[in-house]
Image (cartoon, rainbow, N blue to C red; front, side):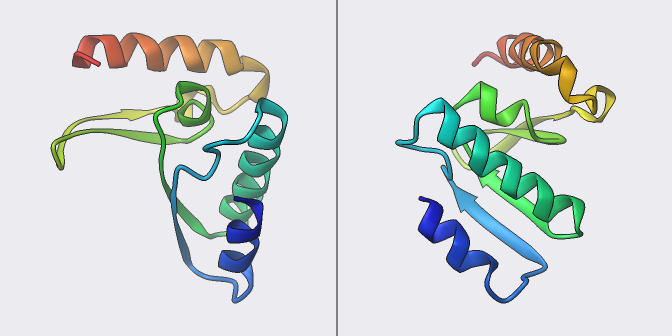
Length: 102
Protein backbone atom coordinates (compact mmCIF):
# COMPACT_ATOMS: atom_id res chain seq x y z
CA UNK A 1 0.00 0.00 0.00
CA UNK A 2 2.70 2.46 0.98
CA UNK A 3 4.70 1.73 -2.18
CA UNK A 4 1.65 2.52 -4.32
CA UNK A 5 1.13 5.79 -2.47
CA UNK A 6 4.80 6.70 -2.93
CA UNK A 7 4.54 6.00 -6.66
CA UNK A 8 1.46 8.18 -6.92
CA UNK A 9 3.32 11.13 -5.35
CA UNK A 10 6.41 11.07 -7.56
CA UNK A 11 5.25 13.63 -10.14
CA UNK A 12 3.49 15.97 -7.67
CA UNK A 13 0.01 15.31 -9.08
CA UNK A 14 -2.84 17.77 -8.64
CA UNK A 15 -5.14 14.91 -7.68
CA UNK A 16 -4.72 11.42 -6.24
CA UNK A 17 -7.40 8.73 -6.46
CA UNK A 18 -6.85 6.20 -3.67
CA UNK A 19 -8.95 3.03 -3.51
CA UNK A 20 -8.79 1.69 0.07
CA UNK A 21 -5.31 3.18 0.70
CA UNK A 22 -5.30 1.81 4.25
CA UNK A 23 -6.73 -1.61 3.45
CA UNK A 24 -4.78 -4.53 4.97
CA UNK A 25 -2.74 -2.14 7.15
CA UNK A 26 -2.69 -2.11 10.93
CA UNK A 27 -3.99 1.01 12.69
CA UNK A 28 -0.51 2.53 13.14
CA UNK A 29 0.38 2.13 9.46
CA UNK A 30 -3.07 3.32 8.48
CA UNK A 31 -2.62 6.48 10.54
CA UNK A 32 0.79 7.09 8.93
CA UNK A 33 -0.68 6.76 5.43
CA UNK A 34 -3.49 9.16 6.30
CA UNK A 35 -1.00 11.65 7.75
CA UNK A 36 0.97 11.60 4.49
CA UNK A 37 -2.20 12.06 2.44
CA UNK A 38 -3.20 14.96 4.73
CA UNK A 39 0.18 16.62 4.14
CA UNK A 40 -0.29 16.31 0.39
CA UNK A 41 -3.79 17.76 0.70
CA UNK A 42 -2.53 20.66 2.82
CA UNK A 43 -0.02 21.39 0.04
CA UNK A 44 -2.76 21.64 -2.58
CA UNK A 45 -3.21 18.08 -3.84
CA UNK A 46 -6.82 16.94 -4.03
CA UNK A 47 -7.24 13.48 -2.51
CA UNK A 48 -10.24 11.34 -3.38
CA UNK A 49 -10.30 8.06 -1.55
CA UNK A 50 -12.62 5.11 -1.16
CA UNK A 51 -12.90 3.50 2.25
CA UNK A 52 -15.24 1.39 4.33
CA UNK A 53 -13.38 2.38 7.52
CA UNK A 54 -15.15 5.12 9.48
CA UNK A 55 -11.92 5.96 11.33
CA UNK A 56 -10.27 6.69 7.98
CA UNK A 57 -13.27 8.58 6.59
CA UNK A 58 -13.42 10.71 9.75
CA UNK A 59 -9.97 12.09 8.88
CA UNK A 60 -11.31 13.50 5.62
CA UNK A 61 -12.94 16.90 5.18
CA UNK A 62 -15.81 15.77 2.99
CA UNK A 63 -17.53 12.39 2.85
CA UNK A 64 -19.79 11.14 0.08
CA UNK A 65 -22.11 8.23 0.78
CA UNK A 66 -22.43 6.20 -2.42
CA UNK A 67 -24.85 3.33 -3.03
CA UNK A 68 -24.85 1.41 -6.31
CA UNK A 69 -22.79 4.14 -7.97
CA UNK A 70 -25.15 6.94 -6.92
CA UNK A 71 -24.31 9.67 -4.42
CA UNK A 72 -26.94 9.39 -1.69
CA UNK A 73 -25.53 12.04 0.61
CA UNK A 74 -22.65 14.35 1.46
CA UNK A 75 -21.24 15.24 4.87
CA UNK A 76 -18.80 18.07 5.57
CA UNK A 77 -16.36 17.50 8.44
CA UNK A 78 -14.72 20.95 8.20
CA UNK A 79 -16.36 21.88 11.51
CA UNK A 80 -14.07 19.34 13.18
CA UNK A 81 -10.67 20.49 11.84
CA UNK A 82 -8.90 20.14 15.19
CA UNK A 83 -7.28 16.69 15.29
CA UNK A 84 -7.89 16.47 19.03
CA UNK A 85 -11.57 16.10 18.14
CA UNK A 86 -11.09 12.72 16.45
CA UNK A 87 -13.75 10.99 18.53
CA UNK A 88 -16.22 13.79 17.87
CA UNK A 89 -15.55 13.50 14.14
CA UNK A 90 -16.06 9.72 14.24
CA UNK A 91 -19.23 10.07 16.32
CA UNK A 92 -20.69 12.74 14.02
CA UNK A 93 -19.88 10.69 10.93
CA UNK A 94 -21.29 7.49 12.44
CA UNK A 95 -24.52 9.30 13.36
CA UNK A 96 -24.84 10.68 9.83
CA UNK A 97 -24.15 7.28 8.27
CA UNK A 98 -26.82 5.68 10.46
CA UNK A 99 -29.28 8.36 9.30
CA UNK A 100 -28.33 7.49 5.72
CA UNK A 101 -29.11 3.81 6.36
CA UNK A 102 -25.56 2.45 6.45
